[in-house]
Amino acid sequence: MKDYKFKTIIEPFKIKVVEPIKMTTREERRKYLAEAGLNLFLVKSENVLIDLLTDSGTTAMSSDQWAGIMRGDESYAGAPSFYRLEKTIQELTGFSEVIPTHQGRASERIMFTALCEKGKKVVSNMLFDTTRANAEAAGLVTLDIPCAEFYHTMKPAPFKGNIDLDRLEDELKQNAKGVAMVVMTITNNSGGGQPVSMQNLKAVRDLCKKYGVVYTIDGCRFAENARFIKTREAGYENKSSREIAMEIFRLADITSISAKKDGMTNIGGLLAMNNKEWAQSCKNNLILTEGFITYGGLAGRDLEAMAIGFNESVDDEYLKYRLQSVNYVGQHLLELGYAIVNPPGGHAIYLDAKTILPHIREEQYPAQALTSALYEFAGIRGVEIGSVMFGRDSGDAGTGASANTKEIPHTQELVRLAIPRRVYTQAHMDYLLEAMSVFKGEISNIRGVRFTYKPKVLRHFTARFEWC
Ligand SMILES: *Cc1c(COP(=O)(O)O)cnc(C)c1O
Image (cartoon, rainbow, N blue to C red; front, side):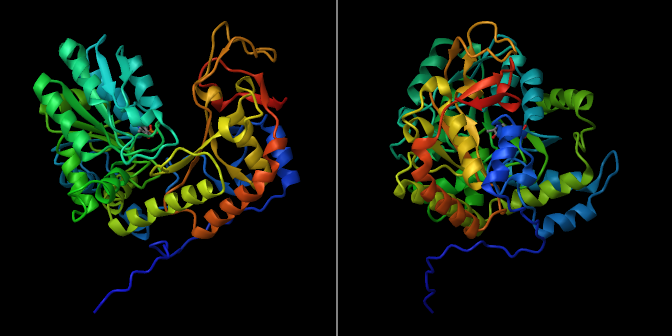
């Protein structure tokens, strides 16, 4: 019998527990925004209608995961929850050594301090900011070499997360001994959630083998990347995303993962590898800083939620819905005439504030202004990824109200709308699209912003602003 191909994307789950959303008026939001100094990190989440600040740790867990949480065993050592997680990860990655941590950045810190020699280089398609910070804190030098397509933000290409293989080979040819590891981030989070092709991942494996360099996968969004390979790369259309993910991990020597993304949990992370000596060094560091080797800074129930979540994330019905729903938002925004990083990534849409707000000068933080205006208009919380987050103060940053001088801006002014997993329905996304459609009429009235408080480090979290 022929199966009718329905075009409507439905959420492949039913809702058992609901969390009410508090409705607010524009007037109320204007007040909350002013109280927060135009910084959405300082707005209370209960005053947000649709929270697209991050997809990290914001996942809605399944009924199986919640059942697992009750089963979670809180024994200090040797809890069955750990062994269930270990088995899940061993099957998925092919790595025998599985080390739990409380979140991705702990995995990174342990990996870089336990396995890399100071002064060496970490070469990547693009390191995520905590990965870069941890590598640098461990005395390493970082180098991002994304592929050429990456630089054409608005021009679609299937695998804009790829590494530039020629530049990688040049690096390795010049001084392979000086390279501690090659890290492939899948998908490329800082680069718009863009996937890496299997061909690129394999070519990196070949180069790492040829030059004797460690191959690491930062696998935070491994499942979304696997699904992109299934739908975009020749030869993979008949494989399941799970099989593709299994193939990816088996190319590498080690993987570092935050379970708060495709692990489908609210907290957790891990390291996995085959090399027993490396594992021993990592475990020694883990015991010192995170906890014993069978819980790694987590409760037994968290390990149980991870053991189940890592299998749910590679389910093709879920991934189809996930990537199609993000794409749905992206395509409609393009139709409305918004400039976005194209094609849309796996977990987020990135609005290009410089193009959307051409009347706001770079020194007046267009992406920060857009983020604030969007919250005030419709209660939607995105995050600025531009000169507030990555710009630098060339002089003494100071902390005073007048510290608006000597800024070195970031090259891009983006607003990221990250979609939490399994949290919002199509109606929420349709609300977002309606809001963005009406919002177009408001854009020319949006003013730039200036700092009233400029912290020296990680300033986007606590900075305050006023409208110009
Ligand atoms: C989130 C993230 C990390 C860090 O993980 P945390 O759990 O937030 O510490 C590392 N790499 C990438 C690509 C990420 O997206």
